[in-house]
View 1 (cartoon, rainbow, N blue to C red):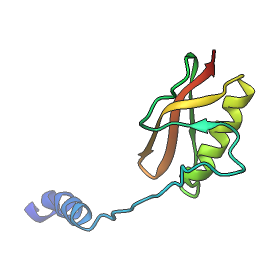
View 2 (view 1 turned 60 degrees about the horizontal axis):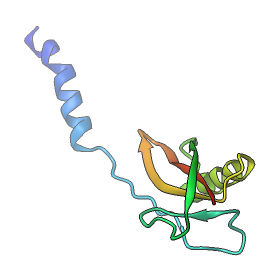
View 3 (view 1 turned 45 degrees about the horizontal axis):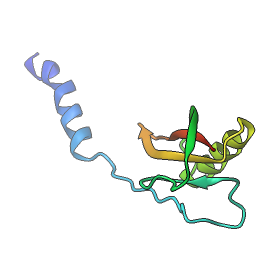
View 4 (view 1 turned 120 degrees about the vertical axis):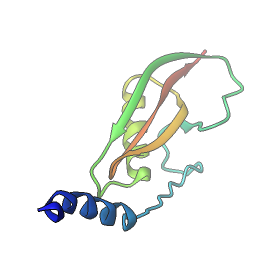
Length: 105
């Protein structure tokens, strides 16, 4: 009977010790097909006004590059010239990209 009580704990320990580790890479260099400028760590040298916070999330099959492209399309629709403070993160297996849309003065 005691074995049945500890079975879920044993299963959980096995799962935690064999969990997967994944890495992801997104190309953020300026390409000819970029819709707007993307700033991850640096800020633009020009004066600007922050317009909106924006984010895009995808499924486990979405790449960060694809989400960044979709994010830039939406930022352009909102009247932005660039996205600053771009962050990449994952919630479980679902990637998310976010940032602040800006308009140059």
